[in-house]
Image (tube, rainbow, N blue to C red; front, top):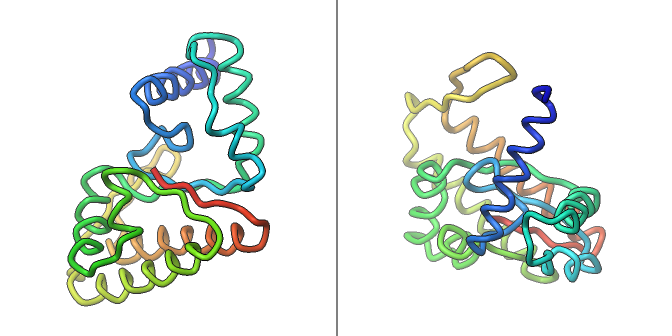
Length: 176
């Protein structure tokens, strides 16, 4: 088995484990990520085959990937808790505050609310995230350090893009 096939098999197993545990099929490689799909496709996304080891499950997963219009990582578990969940709870941001424990699906009017909450988070980060805080990221085979604020703003920009796309296409933003 070559590396690409092994990675695909490993990714499928991660997905199967997540679905077995009742987690969303949208985000399995980082602790928290986002995806955009059309509201019309939600019935497909929300109804995986029961047997996660079946060819039907593999076909369902491939179709979900095909219909996912945008996806991006937000943060690992600890980073999400520290930089997204705790501030959202402190600031009274109900949508972002719900993600850590329950995940989030936002559509329609709630998309604008999520955009406003994200903007409030950015302003809060500017007040308390220290200039000497760093984020270690992997870029292909390199490990890089970037300022934490830059990383947070880049990831929140991805969320903004997801919201804008969902608003334009009658879509949904899922974060889990």
